[in-house]
Structure formats: structure tokens, C-alpha cells
Amino acid sequence: MRELKRQMASLYFERWGLSKNKKALSRITQAKAEADSPQLVIRDPYVFEFLGLKPKEVMHESRLEDALLDKVQDFLLELGRGFCFEARQKRILIGGEHFFVDMVFYHRILRCHVLFELKLDAFKHEHLGQINSYVGWYKEHEMVAGDNPPVGILLCTEKNHALVKYALAGMDNRLFVSQYQLKLPSVDELRAFVERELKKDG
Image 1 (cartoon, helix red, strand yellow):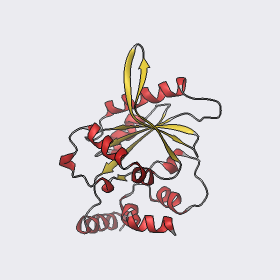
Image 2 (image 1 turned 90 degrees about the horizontal axis):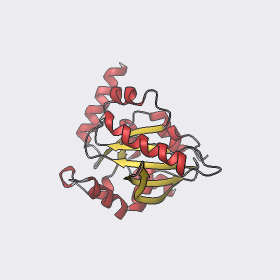
Image 3 (image 1 turned 135 degrees about the horizontal axis):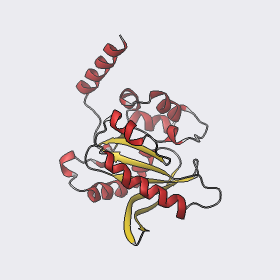
Image 4 (image 1 turned 120 degrees about the vertical axis):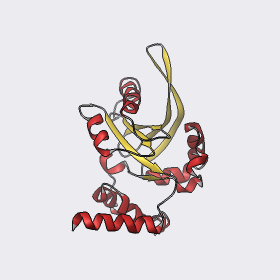
């Protein structure tokens, strides 16, 4: 009942309409069995409406990160089952130079680290080089017996699906690009979206 109330409160129906992978979203939401594949766990899009922020208020990635971690319980609910918070601005040393991973989680079901990199703009292919480097470092330095390889999630305000497809081609690491939005679409925007989708199917 609590999960049903949460899905109603988070407007699951509207999210389902916007999702690019409706079957996976439905399986994640409805299945009682624990998921064991990153493709079933990583959502797209994420809705950060609980932050109460307007897009113009998010001027720096650190501001968005602060807001998410101030409401970490809501953030974890939006991420889905199994995520355990581990670190923010995790400092790692690569070739004598320090870098900082925005947020690090451990997923108890997937048994792997999940690294988040936040961007305040649309997806660019060079963003992948950054998160790919972090995931590669974690694979070599942080994995222990029983762990699966780490997962990297790049959160952007917009994404060109074709560009993401080709940018990810040939990469060995498990990387995902998810869009986030600070509020759900209006009723009119949802209606227009449904009408467009029906025309495609028709």
C-alpha cells in the first residue's frame, strides 16, 4: 500500500507516458522480485520535483547536488530500490591529478558502485569521457570480492538519443545517460505528448 501511494503521489502514470522504456519502468514498479540488471534499475527520466526548484534557480552543479542531498530520502525514493548513499564529491587520484565524483552510491541488489555525474546542460559526448574515466578507476581500485563492475550514470537536462547511442558505442563500461527534470509536465504538455505518440502509432 505504501508503494502504491508513492507511485500515485509521484504521478507514475504520467511518468510512464514520458518514459522511453515503458516495459522496464513497468517491471521495476510492479515486480516484487528484486531486479538484477542495471537496465531495469536505471530510470529515465528522473523527476526532481520534490526539490521545489525552478530551472533558473539551478545555476551551479553544486547547488543541484546540495538540494538533492538535503532531501536525500526523497532522492533515494526517486532513484528506486536498492540504492545506498556512500559519498559526495568523492576524491580520486588519477595519474597524479585529483578528480571528484559528484555522488557515489552502492546498489545492494546489483552489488556494485553507482557513480553519478550531474550536468546542468544538455548531453554532450565529451561528458561520457569524464564518467567513463571515473568508472574505470572504480573498477580497478574499489571493487572487492563479490562486487560487480561499477555503473556510471550521467544526469543531463536534455539528451539527443541518437547522439547518446553513438557516443556509447564500443564502450566496455556500463554507462547510462538519463535526463532529469525539476518538475513534471503540465496537463496540456502531457495531452500534446499523448496525441503525438498516438499519431506515431496510428
